[in-house]
Amino acid sequence: MKMNMLVFCASIGLLATSCSKTFLDVSPKGIQLESNYYQTPDQAFAAVISVYNPLSEEAGGTDNTYINKIGALNAASDECYAGGGGPTDMGTWQVWNTYTLSAAVGPQAGYWDKAYTGIYRANVALERLPAVPGLSSALLNRYVAECKFLRAYNYFDLVRLFKNVVLTTTAIAAGDIYTQVQAKPEDVYAQIEKDLKDAITNLPATVATTENGRVTKGAALAL
Image 1 (cartoon, rainbow, N blue to C red):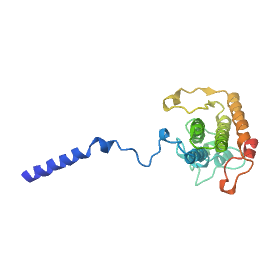
Image 2 (cartoon, one colour):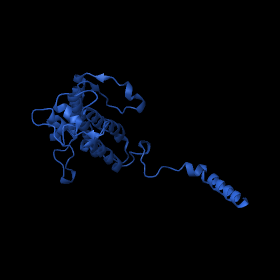
Image 3 (cartoon, rainbow, N blue to C red):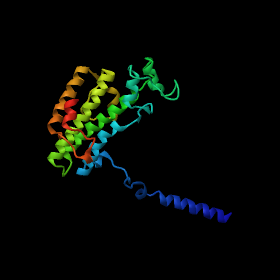
Image 4 (cartoon, rainbow, N blue to C red):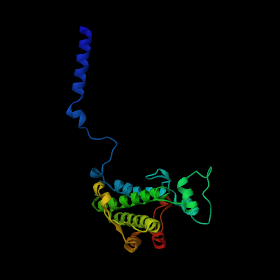
């Protein structure tokens, strides 16, 4: 019994010494916070690429389904039927194919999330990029142009799909997400046009092969 009590006391002692303030207050490893980011040109570049990232997403969003635009939008047209393993495969596309889309079932949640993720990241980058140390004015102008193009691109999708959407050119705080008011479509189109005109000035006419996929002046003119 004495031996068991000694082991118990030793265990308690180890637990007590492992819970020191030094142990609990270590800086997070492998995590970049917005508060300590945007400190180098490389981080500025990574931030711009993060604005592009939602364009490549094939799945995700609130409903965790496929959010590729081509499949669902084509199924809504006369060009094709929603396929798959059967009539229940990809129900979010099937309802558009049969014109039975509802507020609860359809691909719209994914489109909404995807576009606003891109818009939020663009807004954050546009606010923070000008203060990045060591970022040349030429790169800054190009990065700002890319972010404005991508914001316009996302709003162009949103206004055509949903008509009345939230229009913001600043990063919305988490506590303010549910207090936003929808804008008139004409105001959204005006912002799209403004962003594109601003972007055209500083976008390159062509990009190097290593930069394929990044926005050019021609893309902004076309949009």
